[in-house]
Length: 229
Image 1 (spheres, helix red, strand yellow):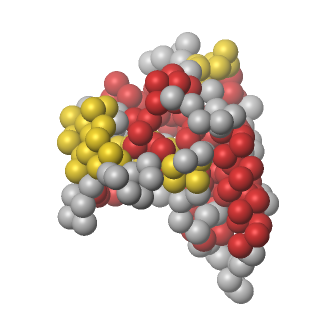
Image 2: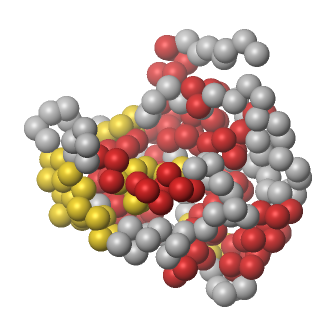
């Protein structure tokens, strides 16, 4: 398949649209954290029931660059540092480039471990930014049909991004809820509800096995609300 290409101008337009959509000017770290944890009034079980159930489409033609050529910008930060700023505590900063997190503490949702993040060639990978709905999973469940600007938004959307334990993220890879759930069982309701919110927002579908796995988790938290985003 011929490699998909996007003009630099179009990428700038997509990035600008994302930034404007997420930020009406720069907001405080406290406001960002509040937004990331805010819930809608919609129950996850209700939202899940409305998501189409289909088989997994072929992975043919998949390339992460079809979503985003690296991290997009959100306000003054690239998406990675935006999420680090949102999810880490006790942050210190590098003098340059602008908005670069140097160190911080993550209370990891996937493992319930406390992780001390230190930026560096051999240390940065201890904390990774996870696409809660994996990029490859999205491609095989509807994202092939989205415009580039929608895929770009999906890739850089804080709703779909979490700072997490690096090894746990690597273990997850591109799994859906049918094949991987966070080892920290107390976070599974929040994790599944976030996946549902993302799939609902970007009109992606679930497989039957995935829906069943989500439903089993939500039996433990029938009043769980999907996050806002």
